[in-house]
Length: 153
Image (cartoon, rainbow, N blue to C red):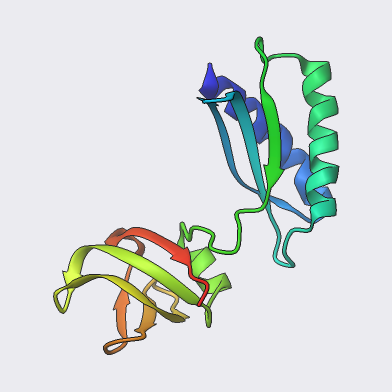
């Protein structure tokens, strides 16, 4: 059921959001302590404002009311990925070149798996150059990453 809901919402989001200058970052639909939660994360190169979240929430609420394909009660939440957002692909690393990030690698580099530093470069073959606060610059590819996110220093 959750995958069907997410697929329908994704299709609608991909038709709606570009006209608003936004893009879909993620969708979650799951049961939590306070009931079912539908979270829609939106993003934009210019950032996401509270007004963007309100407008998207209003549009989705109206659409969900008309479509009526969720058979039980749920809460709708619309937000940005946040200031310490996950980095999920080389395009996102490229977008945030020059900013601080925290990365966790699958295998250690110089005996260490977790690094905080600056994303220095992303080259055409997908190699990401990282300049950690401690140690020398090194390169890695997305497959080397266990987890990565922007880091507020």
